[in-house]
Image 1 (spheres, rainbow, N blue to C red):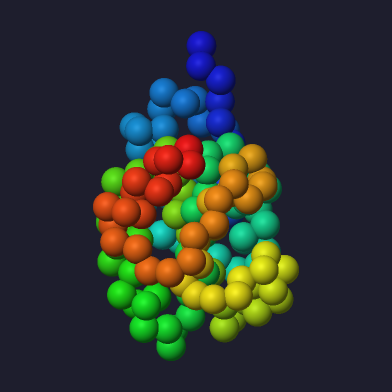
Image 2: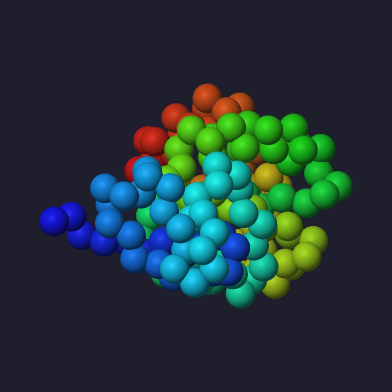
Length: 144
């Protein structure tokens, strides 16, 4: 029997145990009953960010962005496309650095957009600048 993995709900942020072979079959949150994977990045606050990074067994890619940032807006569709392609093996989240300045400082964000890939609660890779969907997907696959 495959080992369960911990997956944090994108809606209520509860931690769920899901068998690895069931990740692709539309698992739902045990608490709020909503889908654990939507194919879209999840906007996170500082509190929710900590839950997703610390409690998730699947890699988490974080897009640190701001509403006024042109390159951030340019990359947003590519980030959406990457989420559609790589979920449920990778969780995609977004952090608005204007709203979460303390978090952005804590993780050392110096320019935006900046992508950070977390695995096992630790930073595994970092990339600054806007990327196309194919480059983004290849970058993530190379890290995982």
